[in-house]
Length: 341
Image (cartoon, rainbow, N blue to C red; front, side):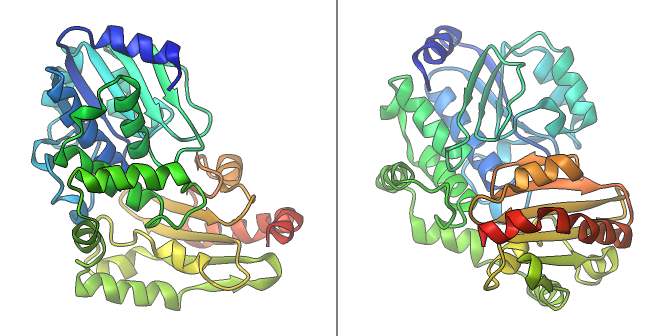
């Protein structure tokens, strides 16, 4: 965080403030971990801090310290709106534009009088905050929260609760420290978090070793649906609504499935297409290796975006049309995919 942004934040936090911390829609480990970690930190400075998530998040994150205090906007719209409208500051974490929170909550945020602070590592951040800490090279927003604390000269406030939340966010957003965004600094931050009380083995167990039988069987269906296009160094997975319903799908059950497609030898581009009949869309998660930008691909074709090697998007067409269109688009990228392989 540069000196100018640091000074602005110090001035904003110079006296006790009423603060709301907002994560993105369909929150993942980094969104939940960074928001909770920041909330514990701000409370340690004497501020009133509340975390609001647009909608619910996976069960494998519901053991995190402070999770019981998160307000879900979809369930408590009136309370959430009142908290935002009466806040002095709104911190937005792990997203680069207010459209990432969903239409209704976006309207509430855009109409409130609070000042905004953004902490995020996605590309092309919007310009709505009085203080923006944006770094696309960072492994995760959770790592950025640690550096945020350090920049303010408050690293000594690192508690066990903060450490557990931030470690979880870093671990999940780096694929257990496998992704290219994992830097030497990321490992040094992780070490400090472990020293502060984040027990790596236990966190891994809570996040990765609590699969339901239905989720494991659903993974089997996903792998059976895997299609490999070797000449395009691409693999994709499809999941129909019926397949989800037949396996008692719960939020987060398909988390990480796309990485199995990316793990196939010779594949540099992997996608999972998940049918969502309730929203009448196909949700899309994209992953890549090397310099092939799924952020650009998602922005160009699926109203999405994210990082160079990890992005998301959606299609308003049905599943079959979405797949057919995807296959028709791929040849345009053949040279890029071949170069990246």
